[in-house]
Length: 207
Figure 1: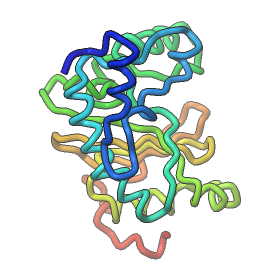
Figure 2 (figure 1 turned 90 degrees about the vertical axis):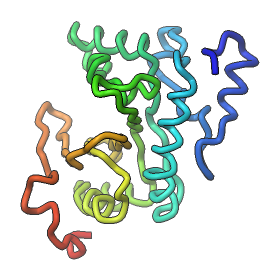
Figure 3 (figure 1 turned 180 degrees about the vertical axis):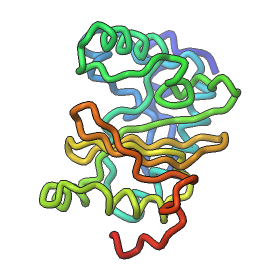
């Protein structure tokens, strides 16, 4: 499949059904791309679709089944858009929260494999069902532990304080299953990963 070169081709790409509840079109939206007129169009649609289907089937569908609607905040970024965001971040503009393209490959850049040759895909989401609970508690950990125990397809997660939005990743390579908590002020805490004693513990009392 070639990179879309027309509105018709891009429209057709957006119609691709990644899983029961998710289509590719919602994964292509970018506020930065819209504001700066940088088209968020994949260079390799086949890899994009393959990685996106794994993410949706193994991560997003289990969340949708458990909690209802899953809101997509940010998903795929093409390499050009991600690089633009990262350069803005290096200039001190914190609204452009993007790592470099090497790190973002097989994360937000779904259509690029990483240096090890593996596919991956990251999406930023909000679970509305949990949002009212989070607004009362300001604690994302119950949701984090539930996902850790019930969604084996995730590779890593990082939770943010804004609307309890979080990044969640599918990855076809080996993953340490890390879960991070970002306080929004530059501090990130590791909640768990495969190497920590609390990883295999019984978490049911925590959610």
